[in-house]
Length: 213
Ligand code: ATP
Ligand code: MG
Picture 1 (spheres, rainbow, N blue to C red):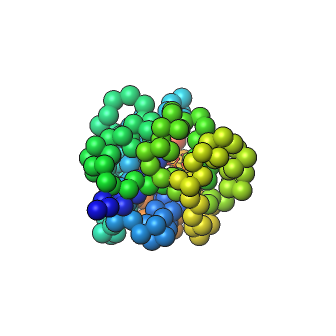
Picture 2: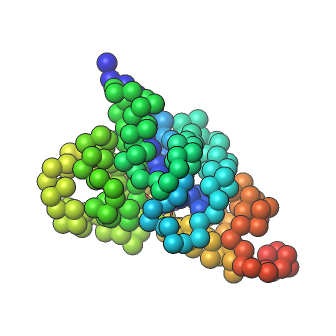
C-alpha cells in the first residue's frame, strides 16, 4: 500500500509571507498531498553571512501564518538539528519519521531550484524525494533543464513544475519595508505583521516608535 503524500516546504521564513502560502497550497492541491509541513531552517547554508532572525521567532511566525489551514503543519526538524540546514538531511529525517512507503515532495520556488546544483548531494536528494518547483516572478523556469544538465537527464521524472499565481513578494522586501517604516499590510498574514511589530523585528537600530506608526 502506498503511504501518505507529504509536502515539505523549506525556507528561512524571515518572515513567512503570502508567496510561501500560495505556493504550498498550490502544490498541495495539484499533487493531492495529504499535508504540507513547513520546515523553517535552523541555519540556512546559503545565508550564513547575512543576519538571520533567531529561529524561534521564525518558527512562531510560521505557526501563526499556517494556523487556519488544517493541511498545514510546522516542523521543527531543521531548527532542532545542529549545524547548517541541508535539504538532503531534512528529507532523510522526514523519511525516518514517515517511513519507507511515504511519498515525499520537497516544495521550492523557481529561484531555489535553479540553484539545486549548489545544494548538498543533489543526486541523493532526488533519489529520495520528488521536487516541486513553483513559478516565481523574476525567475525563468524554462532555463531549468539547461541549468541542471545531467541531473535533468537522470531525474526529470522527479522534478515537477507547478504554476502558482504570481506574487512578487519576498521576505527581503518585507524586512526592508519595516526598516524604512513602510507598510507591509496585505503582503503577509495580519498575525505575522502583528508579531513583527510586537517584537520589533527588522527595525533599523534606534528607530523610534513614531517612525513606525
Ligand atoms: P529572502 O528574500 O529573505 O530570500 P524569500 O521571500 O525568498 O526570502 P525564503 O524563505 O528564502 O523566502 O524562501 C523559501 C522558499 O519559498 C524558497 O523555495 C523560495 O523560492 C520560495 N518562495 C519565496 N517567495 C516566493 C514567491 N513569492 N513565489 C514563489 N515561491 C516563493
Ligand atoms: Mg529566498
